[in-house]
Image 1 (cartoon, rainbow, N blue to C red):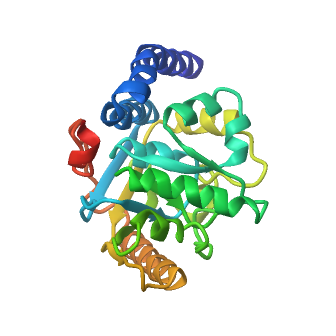
Image 2 (cartoon, helix red, strand yellow):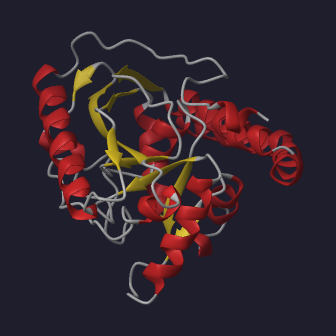
Length: 281
């Protein structure tokens, strides 16, 4: 039954991809507002296949430009956030070379950056700024890598500074801290010994990790939206980054203290609240 379920899920994802692929290719060229929403539909199918249930706390910011600054536990974070909101992600350059995944990331309209070279920071900042200035919402995993699912690594401020460039002079930017916490498997709390089953880091292979999560069959997560931070021309990027990091750490502590209490399934409408008027064209 396990192999049959895995085959059915992979077939479902493949069929969904084949159906949405031409729609997204058309939308990227002619309908940017639609191009922001199509990946969200794909991620919702993926979330259902994983048995992913999400409790949303707080309110996504509606102001633009918007940079969402989040902690990073696993590749599942992309499904978790992407199934809720029409967003694009800032991804490390290696993702652009992974088989299959690279095409999905590009259809998600991800911004690829090379974090191993300091000289690439300026180009990455310009790319992020251009997307933000166009009224899009971007997600930056500010730790720069995935962690162990327990501790939060220090947030990096270099790419947060791209928000200032998107502001265009005196125009402020909104930076919203967001915490992602996985709290349960099959209705039972996740303890430290099982966190490695969802955390994805180091040189772990994607395929066996994906199969392992599919085998679990039910994952409970919480996504908490913190207070938006206005990033004006006179505000230091390190100060903004430190404030976002502190907010995310506080949200994570609060979520873990409550655990699985009041977990409910979230089923956002296709017109997610983060969708701005500028994106809907």
